[in-house]
Amino acid sequence: SDPVKSILNLVDSAGEANSDVELEIRASTTVLDHAALSLLGKSLGDRIEVNSSSELDYVIILISGISQLRLGALPALNENVDEELEQSQTVEQSADWQGKAIGSSFDLSNDEFVSPNTSIYNLPQPRSLDHNTSLEDSDDLVTVEGYHDGMMLGLQVEPVVHWIKKATFGGVVNPKIIPLLEKFCSLIEGVPIQDASDHGVGRLEFSVRGISGSRPVPGIVIPGAIDERLSIIQLLIRNTLTNYRQKVGYSQTENIFYPEPSENWLRLSQAEKKEKLLTVLRGELEKIHVLPTDIDVLEIEYNVRVLVRFCGYLAEPQTDKQPIVMQLERAITEQIDPRLELYLELVRDQSKLRRLTAEA
Image (cartoon, rainbow, N blue to C red; front, side, top):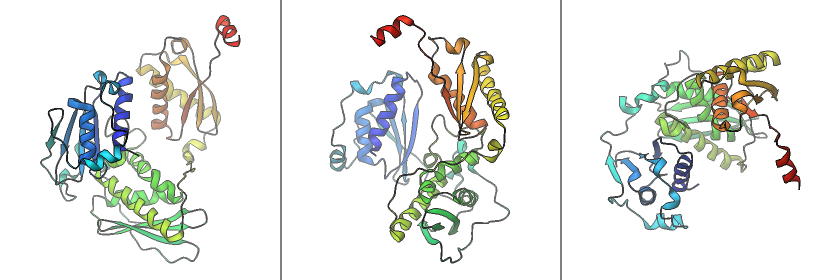
């Protein structure tokens, strides 16, 4: 996908929501190169500030004043973005936007390797390393390895269903990344290799942060953009998947794997599940000064789909229900189980006149 269009769509969505937040986006220079930054500068004008350095392999862009920004009023991007990217070799340092150099270089041995808001990923060294070992030969499994910057991720995969049976790591590994690699290997064992590549690092980040842990950045958490160690692990698993494809001729890219909820949640009875959900949901409503009795849990389908009914203030037509539903869903996924999904009961239009008009 085109990163420039993706960022502009994100800005446009924030603007449509009348959001007055600032967006801080960190991306690899291979994704946001000089040409892409130039296009962003032309489109966003003085709303964008770029921090970059020739010593770093990533850039950070800060976009502010979003509530006053309407992309529809700005000059449209060239429809052939790829052609313009090829033609633009350098970033134009115009008066519309500014690039500021970051004074420090990236170094795994440096304390600046982890920014203050990502210290939650500084895990203690494990007492034993179950996955820092070599893989034993197996006639029934395919052994494959992926490398990045001297580090190795090794997998043994069942070639019929393409599920990972065993994961290991090795090579020249910085101590700061060892606990994360150990945890990552545990998480991807027993899942399809495609899913491990798609979502493994995301699950690692969520697992480290914990169900009730605070987010390292506001809004959507993209693991590879908040901590370089997570980016490295992402590269390792993707390189390993690429090598596996070449080795066995695996070409499928569709991911239909859905992890089950936790055992702690599954072992609860329906009544216990409902009670636990209501405790979290009503507690969240109290935070926004809404009566906790204005919500009820009607049904829990497939152990993950939570159907709720609004009443009182929440059911009034003028109440904006979408952000409330999003906040409530975030609460139950963070405090109970990340697989839970919240659905609001469909309400039939009570106006007889409107129904008759529609039927006519």
